[in-house]
Image 1: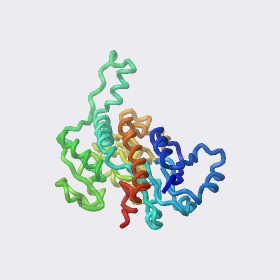
Image 2: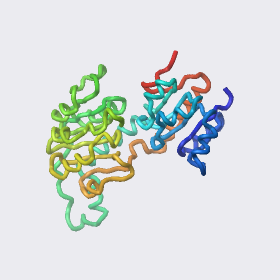
Image 3: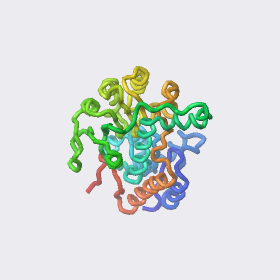
Image 4: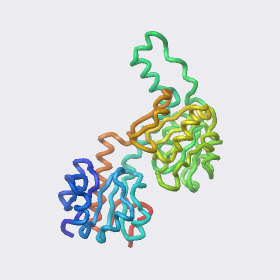
Length: 320
């Protein structure tokens, strides 16, 4: 195949760029003074795209590249790529599952602990020198006696469930369909799950099917002792409804790693000191991000050598 032409819309990790440049002719769109001119020039030759979560690739963009055969996406979520359009036009889309599962599950449990015990606020109390004046108040919430609901029992959801079992938490879940490999309590609606638990962890990807799935109705069903954790995509939770629920006491607390308009975080959330807020760092360790980047490279290398990627998404299955 020689050196296929590859478009990189945004900067990626150095080891990804270095390895891809060994086997592909890489066009760095983010460095171009005139991006449109570069796209016009290289469009007929582009066979592959390597992209991250912040560089959307929609049908209109893909249609510009008549030779396009694969899009290798960095991250387990790929809602910034129109995978359905790609599948309809014979283009593979790949993501980076498995390699970030344990890291993200660790972060989800950390957020849950922080939200339940106000650990971030307690640390800020110490750092501000207030401990010498008074002890941090007893927290009104705890993990003791809680029941955990998982919205999205995929790879990461199951890893969270395994950790939660170690904390003695009963587990229930909601998926589009019942999982056959677990015995956890299943609910066929998200509202039904929220009614049955007091702690909800959202682990689903973004997109139209999950947009604002955690809404005012779901939050009300969770109840006044409720804690909601989001480790998936910011668009899954209706932030306005969440803020109102927190301010009105409809639920107790939240632990959030993702937000609707990142990196912007509503000031109302920042002002609630008892919440646990993180800047989208669920998989952000050097170890895990390097593994994710390597899978981006390996998908492209395998496709170049065999015509088949390693981890195609469901919308673009391996073709016989």
